[in-house]
Length: 402
Image 1 (spheres, rainbow, N blue to C red):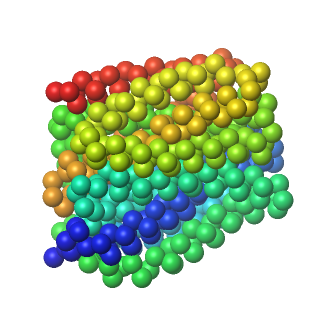
Image 2 (tube, rainbow, N blue to C red):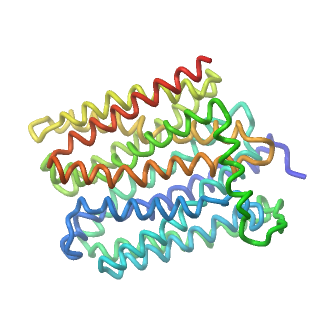
Image 3 (tube, rainbow, N blue to C red):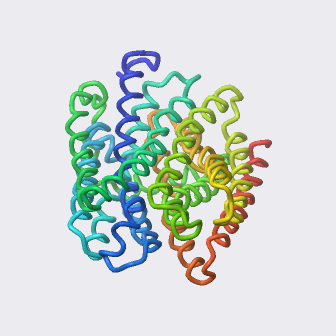
């Protein structure tokens, strides 16, 4: 029998600990993008080629998401989180060894470890969160993502300059491993609903595809899946190309470019809390997501027209608005996915919608890199993103009105 959702102690412990886990997991997920300018010359590639690393990370995350809800039930969410952090730590250590082939292997391992973390944490929060605070709770937990991005942007460039990029990557691995050990006491609080399952340890085909089918039939989740794809595509570009674009396109220094990413992502952390609180207040989370899309469209368009001649303050302002929206949407999205799931199946429905989220983040760096190679202009990629988000926001707004 699960504890009542109003159990304050279980709720607060879950919220704080899962937010910290999200911060650490995000650091592993994003390390290569921030370290790219330092690592690229030694690896014999261009800094913008980090797009291929990012896409491999998301491809592996998509694979590990399939059936993640069923595996989560069998192992327990905390054990699932521990396993994911340990695997991601291994990926960081392999990245620190250097070499293009090992970097590709590292991307796959980091993605396999990071993919299940949202599924496991959503399972816990859906059980212990007060319903009236669902959106802000998920948003607070998801604020760990931009905080992790911000820490990467503020700390890793300095570590890379002082000790070398390999040691910076290894440090991320150590932090991930330490976090996996630190959450062990939480097992007795949240791993009390484990089940062996009829099909053994691995999920069956039915367990993988049924949540996808049910989510697709939902009139709100269907357009949400598409806007989640475009939002995650935009977020991936903001997170993984801000430093590269600032150095190569806007001619900023490496440290100043890292600070620009930190500013955008810290705003994203506050944005996640703000949008979650607004969705709880209005009780219309899908309409809030459509509104976020309208602002993302304007900010991405402004980013497309930025040049080295712009004042630094103007560039920061655009990045802050883009960060507050393109990095600030995820908590409301996950909370709505969990809320529309049948009782006890929040992890599976979250996994189903996350498949689309990871798809956007998988494809967008490759497409952005291709557009950059063809046009030698960052602005074209930003304009394409703005157009896609505008279309999806329109259809979600129409579905929300109905």
